[in-house]
Length: 378
Image (cartoon, rainbow, N blue to C red; front, side):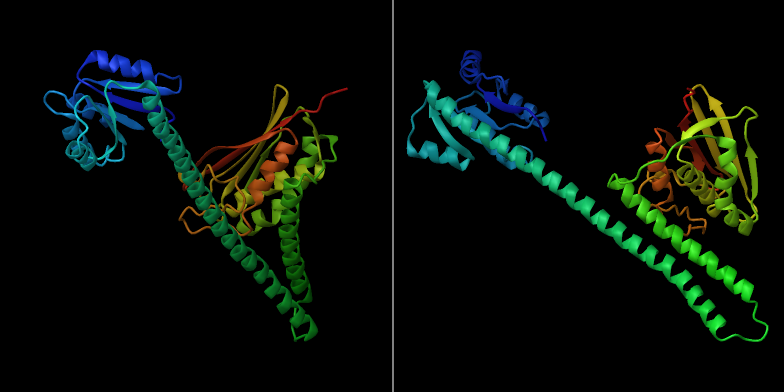
């Protein structure tokens, strides 16, 4: 779609073209001149015209022949044609013109008001057509977005049902065992399983509530000036069960110089716990996860890397979107609702920080980096 309105003026005489140009000139109109039918056809290859004004009597290809060629060509057949003629206006002549695709005739000598009035109709029609095309394209894009959102919603509901059904089944089975005790029943194991799955369901609900609060501006941070080293053990403890269950090696490297942050401790723990827990879930058993902290100028940086399944290139721009889960084709698809990194991103940004995917490749693991401002010393 073009933003410029263009008219095509075709006449073999330069003085006639100059006269037409002077009569039609306006700031929002671009006038292209052609001295022959062949030149006009060449111009039509690279331009979209709102109107073509064709002189009937030209040497070689006359106006009628040019119009017939235009109507036979897909690119030019929609261009309105007004014939300019100094000849007689007999019915046979006009019939041939209309048969060739003309919308009107203007007799020479041309009356300026008539020319401007008739041409302005097609100028306005072109603008309206462009607006309709734009609205159509916007509607098509909106339709695609709505369809994608609907598909995403359906996927989310399916994942949510799966994530809730499994722990509920375990809870139901555990209660059944406790209500009907059997010989040799390890009650502590049953209690541990129930607590674990209740915790999983609680985290799911908490994440959903946090996302909703953030999107509606109802979440507030309770910041404190705290040392990063004091917060890390609690943050890593959240991912502990996943790391232990999969036999991962966890490497933690904190600087000797203390790093003081101005953060909401609960949210900081949630940020780190989600990132490290995500690395644990997407790393095959016996993998390695490294957590490194450092200080750079007025910011603290926290890097989490793993040697897990990695993220396909085409999905790397989507990982911070809601309900997005990575499936790299290696058979590992995370549990959860796909809101972990989306929630982390919003919590980091609430702290005036930034999170980014530094690098990732299928089969080679991923590295995430979080930047947070250092606490201002009073």
